[in-house]
Length: 72
Image 1 (cartoon, one colour):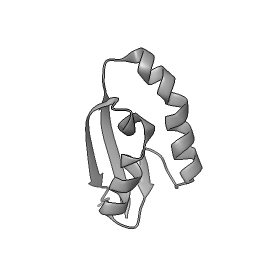
Image 2 (cartoon, one colour):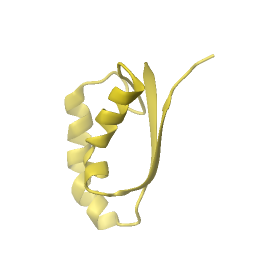
Image 3 (cartoon, helix red, strand yellow):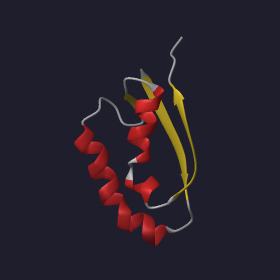
Image 4 (cartoon, one colour):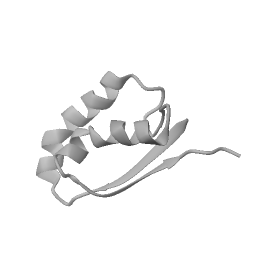
């Protein structure tokens, strides 16, 4: 299942800059095909992947949405 994760960052540029390398490393280490959209076994698995993103765990995401990406 292809998923898309949309998120809006908090207005905390110094903290975002500090955590950005960990965020990039997290997604790179998962080696998922895609980044803006990515493959996961289910929406629950996609949510687990997103929940472990350092931007999320460090409370730098103001709002977010995770949806299944359906191409017609």
